[in-house]
Length: 300
Image (cartoon, rainbow, N blue to C red; front, top):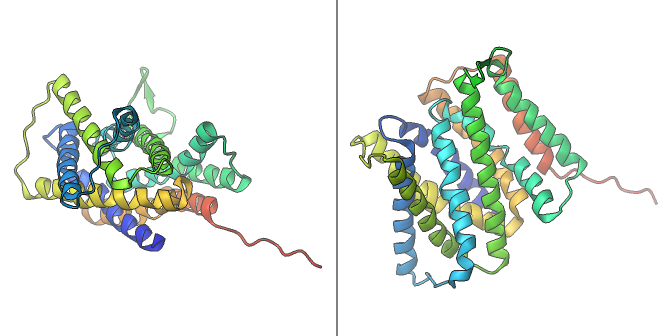
């Protein structure tokens, strides 16, 4: 069961990064995210009602749904959608693979779970990989008059911020499942809170709620809303409930392989020597974090 959840999550989420890139254009990115999660919330709730699985949860517990909605269906994608203005989708997926490292850090901060030496070594390698991947963007001269002059570096920081929000959402979901709350029920409430927050933000900013009438935009919207959100998040969060947030994030190691392949084909991403080295280090660091090494047998 866990293997199927892994494969499904990797294939779905490995392709959503390109779909996000297809939505970057004349429509405000927050509006695109609002439409995505509003549609996902509608589909999710109708599905749950049809199965008679949508149960009422006391209001005092809704603070966790709000947190989950903000972290997984609102703030993180505001960062990711804006990052897509500056970076190829495949590079954002590589940064997103650092979710495993953030999960480890957050487990220590919020759950007092100390990291192992292996985890620290893998994390360091992963960070070095991202630095190599963005090496041309962090050279001296990237700062000019106190502002970032390099859009690639801005995209990197936005991607990191989105990944950290996602990591926090992992911990919230893990808490929900340990409290006995159904994944699909939690997602239903969280999607509503996330989409409502996005809608209010767009209204506050005075954004137009126009929709781009093109097959590319609308196709990406439906793909992101249903497979990318309703199905993908249900599979991933179910995986968290089975094996924990840190181990579930191992699936993020494989996202960049799918995403970078698509980015090379559809976005014309050009590989450099440092980019290849960076991807190898970043993915290798994640593999070190999660690979179980055989223990030496004591000689009797």
